[in-house]
Image 1: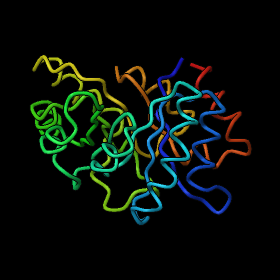
Image 2: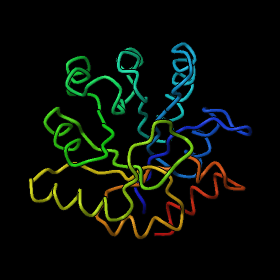
Image 3: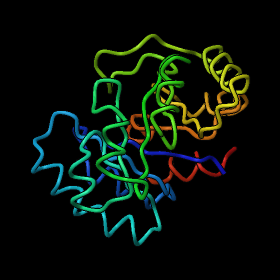
Length: 205
């Protein structure tokens, strides 16, 4: 089964909460609540709605960026982008009980996050994606092979999640590079039936 992280996204059809609810219903057990431009109060409201739902589905709930809110609400952890709070500072605030993930685009990013105490890495983007602004250079399959090879040589053992513009058809090739998981958003939400699409992704490979 594919190790899938679903990243919430608001569309004309679905709210942040609804997008996460459908992914959970489809069998996803790892939700990242990403509401980049929303006010903190709105993020808190949605997180409080999602927390019991994730618990019911035995799913991990991470918040994107909001370290203090993670601590306040006692969700499972946080994902930090390259321009968010440094992982070292987040670890000081959260301690060891929370999951901290970091976005990486280069092997130098990987080294930095590893030294800072990250629990996993979201490496990307695989290709251009419209769900993110100020995109880092696109990696493609070769980028994952290169970074994972350098990690192996440096004896850096951290779970790697591929992220950024990934489609259903891309998944087998990406998994063959040695990554541990796939992060999706638009691919699921653009499907005619996001719940069925989530199930298809989880069970096809």
